[in-house]
Image (tube, rainbow, N blue to C red; front, side, top):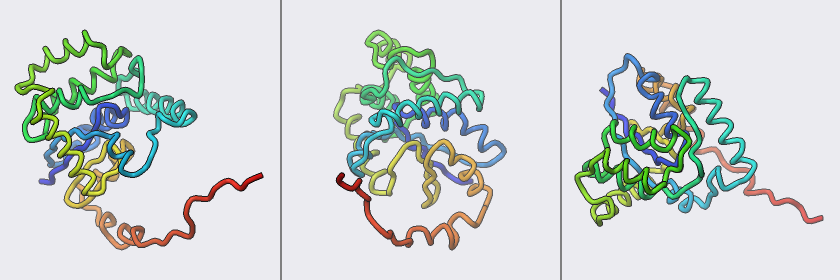
Length: 217
């Protein structure tokens, strides 16, 4: 049986879609899953990137595309009242419900659906309080232990080469994004292209140039 680590942040609509689709995408296969929350903003900082929602035209397209993907896959989804938002409170709450930086599927589902269903404000104080009451965390979400576990999750993910969420990690392979689910299934089914010559060759492909700046007029 293969073991999958599902790295995710509640801020990501693609993490929500991948989470919801995962059981169907891997139906009939033998596998286990660890759900590991990470802070996506730290990935962006590490790699010097802007998030999709920080680039105005890309933001509009991203929201349209994820809603279309949800509709096409029969996944209920509504954009929260404001996005992006600071997900730290949600990440810490989820981790406070689990152990050693991991959360169970029920906790992950509850928080993801809190954000991505109903169209409400993900950080509304009354909703957050109701969510906390529903989850009944066994530790203090604001405690140092929980904060340290979230940081450790994020640091370990960066050390393994993660750059985005969701990322599904199996063995030494990383599968990034909602649209990587078919590729993940192929690997679990034994497709030897994944990890083969072409798979490895791209890491050695030289770059012909760096960023091309727009010429001065």
